Image 1: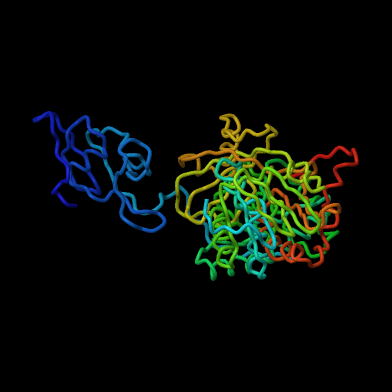
Image 2: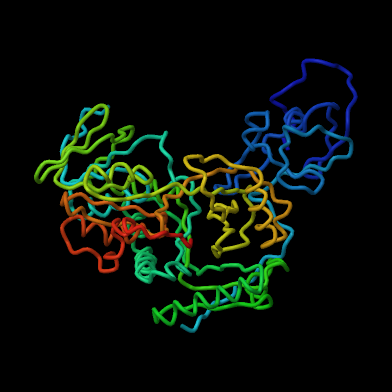
Length: 115
Length: 378
């Protein structure tokens, strides 16, 4: 995870921070930010990979429209990180491809039909 | 307006949706000089709102010609998809693994069995299976307890309908067709051996015309002695975020697309030219989807839309050449995806002067002039 953030805060020097993790790496971020803003400030460049093409993705609109910023938060997949405020102890994970379902994958069944 | 668009063609197709483009693709591929006039993005476009099923089971139970027609299209579909892929590089993601029709009560299951058994008795080659709850759970492990059983036939499939529309446009152009957008047709003038299609900006002439204008056919048909009393029937669709593949089979109310999103929708409403969505119907669609696959309960919906089916009074298509204005054809149906292959491979040769496909004799629009009251069963 790069630490050379493309972003910096312009206000509130010395503001309260909260401790979160991103892909199990600890991150200390200013309280009051959205998860997306906090991760960008923390130097995260890739939030997820595209379910279709597998390409890297990161926040784009920062206002809840584009769905590029999806991450898993506290075990819940596909959260829009630009709409959720960071909280102490939050466990954030990048999302690889399409989200899983709480369901065992069906085994292939060979269909045979007698006409 | 592109000045290079010709004023004449061998055939003018009015309508650039799935129906018109499938016919135009078939015509152009056979060497016919084809011009498609498409209304524009203010049109009601069933082609961009549909569910993407290539569906056979149960269709036409009370009009077996429609069953045969549908089946012939499903059989021709692999060839259509492969041709489009070679000519346009667009993979429409056709799969035909067979489909499930879920039943939520014993009565529904019994009716389903009776319908399909009747069709099999009449048609002969019509494979299907009835599955009880345990059978179904073995096939689809995530199925919910409210589903008491299902019918399965190996005849059904699905595609990505947006890619299909794009591929048909690209394929028609590949074979030399001209497709013009923002060209709403307001009138048709007839002279012996020639039709003039009138738009606000230009006039186009051709010896043959095909009306494939969806809901617009109702008015346009009257210009050339045809009767096509189609009316809108609204369907609403919910689509989810992309999830890992869990369902390769299409079902009548839930399907997972090739790119992972899940579509839900089986509503039918007579609400006129209104393609908006309503919360109560979407809630029912979602409830039925979650009853089918309970593990989808926490999956997020990302979009919902309404679209208007093009429905005739009995629900069946209208295929006809005008007797009073020979050379003018109407082609209209509400299954533009399923029937795309038949439209490209069997309607197009008829337009070019060949025999009318034998199943289609019963689908003339005059059947609606008898005073009979119809109800459609789709």
